Image (cartoon, rainbow, N blue to C red; front, side, top):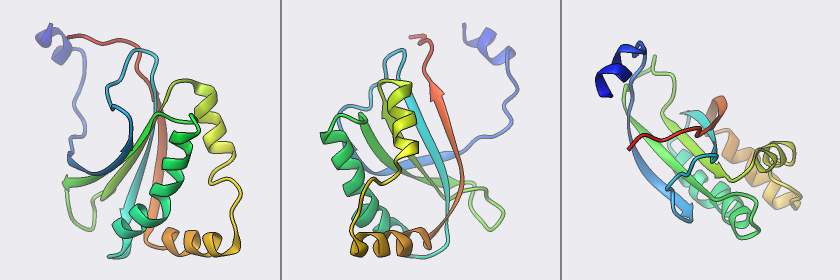
Length: 141
Protein backbone atom coordinates (compact mmCIF):
# COMPACT_ATOMS: atom_id res chain seq x y z
CA UNK A 1 0.00 0.00 0.00
CA UNK A 2 2.83 2.42 0.79
CA UNK A 3 4.41 1.89 -2.65
CA UNK A 4 1.06 2.56 -4.33
CA UNK A 5 0.62 5.70 -2.23
CA UNK A 6 4.07 7.04 -3.07
CA UNK A 7 3.54 6.33 -6.77
CA UNK A 8 0.24 8.23 -6.80
CA UNK A 9 1.64 11.63 -5.85
CA UNK A 10 4.44 14.10 -6.32
CA UNK A 11 5.88 15.42 -3.05
CA UNK A 12 6.30 19.13 -3.77
CA UNK A 13 6.73 20.56 -0.29
CA UNK A 14 7.80 19.14 3.03
CA UNK A 15 7.97 20.92 6.37
CA UNK A 16 9.12 19.84 9.81
CA UNK A 17 7.08 21.14 12.72
CA UNK A 18 6.63 21.03 16.49
CA UNK A 19 3.41 21.73 18.39
CA UNK A 20 4.10 24.42 21.00
CA UNK A 21 0.63 25.24 22.36
CA UNK A 22 -2.84 23.69 22.35
CA UNK A 23 -6.15 23.63 24.11
CA UNK A 24 -9.16 21.36 23.97
CA UNK A 25 -9.88 17.71 23.77
CA UNK A 26 -8.14 14.94 21.93
CA UNK A 27 -6.51 15.75 18.60
CA UNK A 28 -7.40 12.28 17.34
CA UNK A 29 -9.31 12.77 14.13
CA UNK A 30 -12.16 10.59 12.96
CA UNK A 31 -13.47 10.40 9.41
CA UNK A 32 -15.57 13.50 8.74
CA UNK A 33 -13.54 15.82 11.00
CA UNK A 34 -12.87 19.28 9.54
CA UNK A 35 -9.65 21.18 10.17
CA UNK A 36 -9.02 24.86 9.55
CA UNK A 37 -5.32 25.54 9.05
CA UNK A 38 -3.85 29.06 9.07
CA UNK A 39 -0.26 29.74 8.02
CA UNK A 40 1.40 32.71 9.73
CA UNK A 41 4.74 34.41 9.30
CA UNK A 42 6.06 35.90 12.53
CA UNK A 43 6.87 39.62 12.17
CA UNK A 44 7.58 40.38 15.83
CA UNK A 45 9.33 38.47 18.63
CA UNK A 46 6.13 38.71 20.74
CA UNK A 47 4.08 36.63 18.29
CA UNK A 48 3.86 33.40 20.33
CA UNK A 49 3.13 35.40 23.50
CA UNK A 50 0.23 37.12 21.70
CA UNK A 51 -1.13 33.77 20.49
CA UNK A 52 -1.04 32.45 24.05
CA UNK A 53 -2.37 35.50 25.89
CA UNK A 54 -4.83 36.98 23.38
CA UNK A 55 -5.99 34.38 20.87
CA UNK A 56 -5.85 31.15 22.92
CA UNK A 57 -8.53 32.36 25.40
CA UNK A 58 -10.93 32.90 22.46
CA UNK A 59 -10.36 29.36 21.31
CA UNK A 60 -10.82 28.03 24.85
CA UNK A 61 -14.18 29.81 25.05
CA UNK A 62 -15.31 28.40 21.69
CA UNK A 63 -14.31 24.89 22.80
CA UNK A 64 -16.24 25.26 26.09
CA UNK A 65 -19.29 26.44 24.10
CA UNK A 66 -19.04 23.44 21.73
CA UNK A 67 -18.21 25.56 18.67
CA UNK A 68 -14.99 23.67 17.93
CA UNK A 69 -13.14 20.59 19.13
CA UNK A 70 -9.66 22.00 19.76
CA UNK A 71 -6.99 24.51 18.75
CA UNK A 72 -3.22 24.36 18.48
CA UNK A 73 -0.15 26.39 17.54
CA UNK A 74 2.66 24.74 15.61
CA UNK A 75 6.15 26.12 15.01
CA UNK A 76 7.75 25.41 11.64
CA UNK A 77 11.25 24.05 12.33
CA UNK A 78 12.28 23.68 8.68
CA UNK A 79 12.37 25.41 6.27
CA UNK A 80 13.63 28.58 7.99
CA UNK A 81 14.82 31.92 6.67
CA UNK A 82 13.49 35.02 4.99
CA UNK A 83 12.11 33.15 1.98
CA UNK A 84 10.25 30.53 4.01
CA UNK A 85 6.50 30.85 3.44
CA UNK A 86 5.49 30.64 7.10
CA UNK A 87 6.95 30.31 10.57
CA UNK A 88 3.86 29.05 12.44
CA UNK A 89 0.61 27.23 11.78
CA UNK A 90 -2.54 27.38 13.84
CA UNK A 91 -5.18 24.68 13.53
CA UNK A 92 -8.72 24.26 14.74
CA UNK A 93 -10.75 21.05 14.47
CA UNK A 94 -14.51 20.97 13.98
CA UNK A 95 -17.19 18.31 13.85
CA UNK A 96 -19.21 19.97 11.05
CA UNK A 97 -18.73 22.34 8.13
CA UNK A 98 -21.37 24.57 9.73
CA UNK A 99 -19.05 25.08 12.71
CA UNK A 100 -16.23 26.04 10.32
CA UNK A 101 -18.44 28.54 8.49
CA UNK A 102 -19.72 30.05 11.74
CA UNK A 103 -16.16 30.52 13.02
CA UNK A 104 -15.20 32.37 9.84
CA UNK A 105 -18.36 34.52 9.71
CA UNK A 106 -18.19 35.64 13.35
CA UNK A 107 -14.43 35.80 13.84
CA UNK A 108 -13.76 36.78 17.44
CA UNK A 109 -17.36 37.50 18.34
CA UNK A 110 -18.34 40.53 20.38
CA UNK A 111 -15.56 42.24 22.31
CA UNK A 112 -14.95 45.28 24.47
CA UNK A 113 -12.64 48.14 23.43
CA UNK A 114 -9.68 46.86 25.50
CA UNK A 115 -9.90 43.42 23.87
CA UNK A 116 -10.26 44.95 20.42
CA UNK A 117 -7.11 47.06 20.93
CA UNK A 118 -5.23 43.99 22.21
CA UNK A 119 -6.32 42.08 19.10
CA UNK A 120 -5.05 44.86 16.85
CA UNK A 121 -1.67 44.73 18.61
CA UNK A 122 -1.63 40.94 18.35
CA UNK A 123 -2.34 41.02 14.62
CA UNK A 124 0.71 43.25 14.09
CA UNK A 125 3.00 40.43 15.28
CA UNK A 126 2.24 38.21 12.30
CA UNK A 127 1.55 38.16 8.60
CA UNK A 128 -1.47 35.92 8.02
CA UNK A 129 -0.37 34.11 4.84
CA UNK A 130 -3.34 31.83 4.13
CA UNK A 131 -6.14 29.75 5.57
CA UNK A 132 -7.25 26.36 4.30
CA UNK A 133 -9.98 23.96 5.31
CA UNK A 134 -9.69 20.19 4.96
CA UNK A 135 -11.99 17.26 5.69
CA UNK A 136 -10.70 13.84 6.66
CA UNK A 137 -12.39 11.51 4.19
CA UNK A 138 -10.66 8.21 4.92
CA UNK A 139 -8.00 6.65 7.10
CA UNK A 140 -5.61 3.82 6.34
CA UNK A 141 -4.08 2.13 9.36
